[in-house]
Structures are given as C-alpha cells and as structure tokens.
Length: 175
Image (cartoon, rainbow, N blue to C red; front, side, top):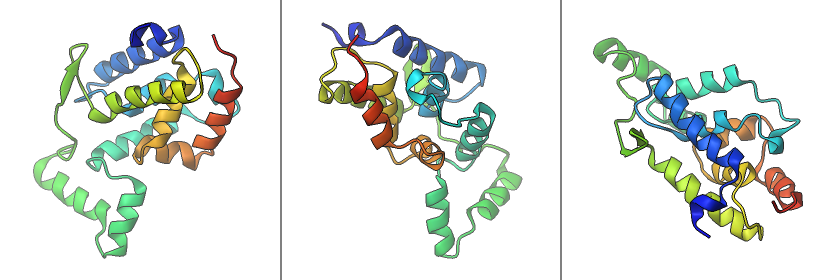
C-alpha cells in the first residue's frame, strides 16, 4: 500500500485545507499552523478548548517574530533582549512582516515549510508505531506535538499533550 493510500479521507482533506487556507491567507508558505487549524474539528481533539481566532492570533504573532516561540522570546529576555522591542524597531525601519521566513519548496503550487513535510513523515511513523494500517488526524496531531515550534507550544498551553493524544489514538479502532 502506498503512503497516499494510507491517509484517511479526514487526513487528506486536512492537508488540502491547510494548503487552501495558506493560499487564502496570502501566506508565503504552507506552515504547520495551517495544518493544525485544518484539524480543529477532528474527533481526537474533542473536549479541548481550542478557539480558532485565538490560535490564529498566536500564529500571526509567531510569523511576525520570524518564527520565535514564546519560549525563545523568554530565553532572549533572560539575556536582556526584548524581542518585541527589537521587532517593533525593525518593522518601523523596514516594514511590517519583514522577519517572516521566505519561500521554500513548492507543493500544490505553494511553498511548503520544511516542518510541514517533516510532520507528514513523522505521522507515518506514529501510525506504524501504534500498529495502525492507516494514517489519520490523530497521527498528524502526534507528529505536530513532537516538534518544538509554535504548534506544539500553543497546543501544550491549552492542555493538548502528546501523551493524551497518543492515549486517544491508541484506543482508536483500526479503520
């Protein structure tokens, strides 16, 4: 069975929606945050408080800061560097959004963030590790939670942990 055939309809639709949403947002690339936003209605996330607008605001701020997470900003603050002040100064001089990452590899006509591709690879590993013969939303979420970036940060801040999603995925019936 080929990898594409292993994707559930829900997982395929989430990937397509992520690309579509990135295009509609005029994003420079398809980032992993678009993948999470496309999965917000997945059954494996039932019961978690994940307001779309709140997540979109966090992702916008992340992109504005050139990919720095809150943890990164705190670490720099500990060194006496106020990231917000630096970014405000740079944007006043060079323009809003100047620190956003540039274009990457193209997929569906849109640049694909390397982390996006890595999530898809890791979701396949998660599926195999759980002994599932399909790749679903739960496997993609597990892969998203493996990273140290903004998606893992905002999910963890809202109580969505790798361990909880893994427990839910393990109890899911094979499709």
